[in-house]
Figure 1 (tube, rainbow, N blue to C red):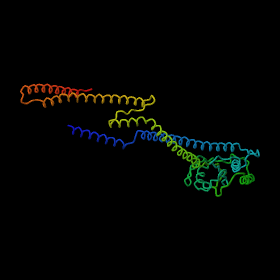
Figure 2 (figure 1 turned 45 degrees about the horizontal axis):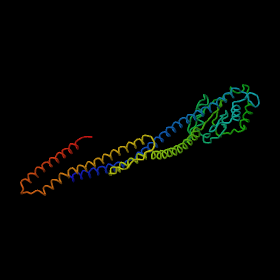
Figure 3 (figure 1 turned 90 degrees about the vertical axis):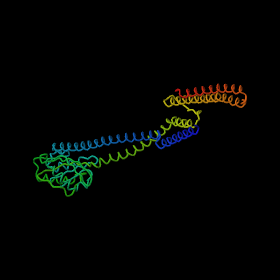
Length: 367
């Protein structure tokens, strides 16, 4: 019976050891909380970044459209007025309207104003955009919209552009235009301050010119991309900072749980004197109080069990001592002594039997 009990105890201890080893393989609660907070922070910052990029990209597109609409509106007003603000006289030609307007306006950032004159020259105001100015695709797009006007979109070597073409006809200039006035206009357009000329421009005819506003979309979006790159770096740094702080907080908040685990392990080794140091009035502190109360009851129960076993051992030892003593002193040849010893031994064995039955009944009883 003793060997079987020892084997069962060793098996249970081995099982507990294996279960403890298996639990140690997984992540701790502290690590899981830290990873959860880090994942939630990255997800939240990613969603904020996507929303920020979407909103700012829409704002960039709106600013581009508003800027081009403003330039087109100013050009319409300037051409429909038909009066040169510097001389107070009506414009004598389409080229004069275009050149004078370019000389008096400054484009926004990443924006260029083009004037396609009737003699085939192309004037510009702003950054020359050499790649765009010499692009056949750009000239072809303007030529397709020169009569009706409208938006143009094109990509040159990976750079995206948006623009608007506004046709300027001879009706905006004075009806009494003649060859001399056109000659004067030609001289003025080549000397307008701040206006450059693109060589090899597409020609126009029949007194038709075109005013073109072009915006470098890629450059405008590039600023947004740079901002988003900075945001990504800041977001990653914020996520790391949040993860570090959450790890420290989790370690501090879960320290009572760690102490609870260590105390439970010491109890498994048979030490019932350990108690948790509880502070505060939160749920974890209440758990510590409850655990300490449980340890008090366990310690009292084990002490009662020890006293009970001592009493049982004493009760069993007394009849056994009596039996042994009488058997040693009994005279086997004396019939009366044998009978008396036999009667007494039967009484003691009955007493021991009742004691054993009571122990079995107590063992089967549930608490």
